[in-house]
Image (cartoon, rainbow, N blue to C red):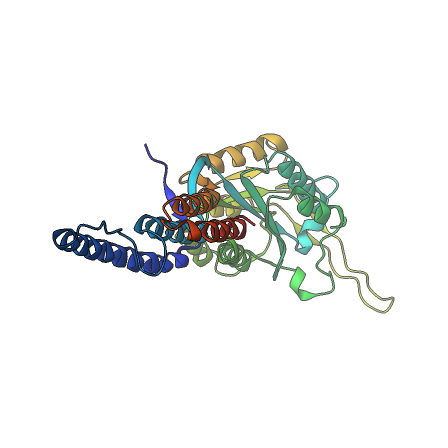
Length: 358
């Protein structure tokens, strides 16, 4: 079976029109010369040589035409398929809840630090060959932090500098609710942006939402419809407990009345509903081991890969056509009829060979 052939610079193939025209002229000249030779043989006894009047024999010019064609093919950079590697891949975007309720300490040391610890462990289990990961933080607003990457250092560097508390300020109103709708929209945008930059991949796609389910806002159902349209599975990891705890109070001035403490508990029912509507699964930190949860998600997403990712390797063949062009020019000099012309033809051919190769 002949391996597939392609040209890296196909526009140069238009230059083949030049040797094609020369080949047609060569055939026409050959027929004309043969006709003239037959007519000369009928009326003369002196041999008539078949050659162009302006230089060399017909065979020299045939070799030269073929050499030009080979040179054009070399410029087009022909490549032959050498190998095909097929790899199934998976892309994960982690959507980490950073709202105020994630400061509750019903998960040790608190929900936020417990979540970050799980993300680190999840990343350590990835192969980082055909699997990529991204991270976005959300509360009332969503803040993408790490784009889809195969570089583990990019994620671990960010986690090392993330801190022991969510980056959203307690004093800001934006930290007091959890807009899962916007986080899902931003996750879809991250996938779309990646396709714009690096092309469409066949990798399976998944969101991993890590949250306590406290104070949802936004139209979650509409966002889940969008994820289904893009064939993105939504997995949810719950953090916290149903018993819950109190959200740390804001620091107040000596003149302000202290506010009543706010109780926050894990909303397991809402989180499970989101996972089911998103085509994924619901897991809960503390119920199953962290490693089991991570491995189940990775295995499931990897298994759902639509197809294998093709990676083709091609071998350059331009050097073969360059050598062919140089060889044809050298061979053509042998057919030069006039010995006085032979030496300058050989010199010209040698110069052409040097130019082609270097």
